[in-house]
Image (cartoon, rainbow, N blue to C red; front, side):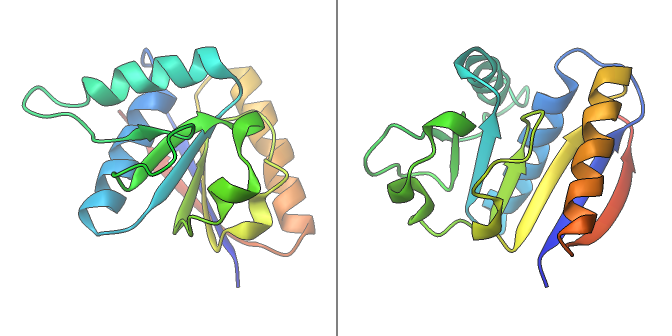
Length: 147
């Protein structure tokens, strides 16, 4: 059964969703898993990229943009609008969705991570995604996170 993990950030932190996505992607990468992290647009992807390059005081999170033909890392980032069939053919283990809507290609993934920030708009969008996944029969898990 396909699973969606909702990560509910309980506190207001600058770039919270990018920081949590980086943490999740780092954990997946250390486990040898491949992650696709999608955003709403290129500006959001640039913000995510900056957070990933400054992920830790002692290291960075290796990642590549979706536009690269043969990205060497296990973490790829980009706008959900730039995901092509060729990108989906890379056989990712997990989709980390930072977009407000569910990507149309979500059924290509057995595991999806949805990150919901503490503000009202993010919560409302998260509730809508939750209802949609539930209607489609996904197994849903909730995780409360404090950054």
